[in-house]
Image (cartoon, rainbow, N blue to C red; front, side):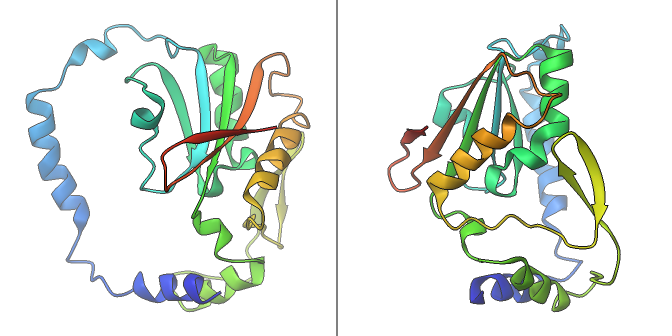
Length: 199
């Protein structure tokens, strides 16, 4: 709880004039000088036909940790690496861009283990200027449809391995997802850099 609220307070310290986005744009100029445009010569599916659902954690270098190169896989990221938030992208990945395998990757020291219920996130939201926690609906994907609800689910994680098993089971509940492809779940250890398969 304290980590969630502290993060909300810390996010308000930077002023709008201290934009890191400007620095990113400057660094892009250097990147463009050695850019190889050939990667976009052909509009093609990922060459390894792999889709990866993983956490948005900024410390995860997914391409390096899996030995991938640009153009080889789709990487679909969201908070906690949850399948529920990835459904729209994954449907398009499989249907339009021919991915045939799915990796679901959660990781140790995940921010979604820092809180245990949705009320803690709502408390932190109230401390953050510029957000509204009134009666606006939250759009939530449930198996087979998307519905509006006034009870948001931020999907806290109490048990990392169980959250992977839950996502593997939830994958099977979405009829628009291809049930004839390989879907495997993994826990990434941030202390060792190693993956452990969870079944």
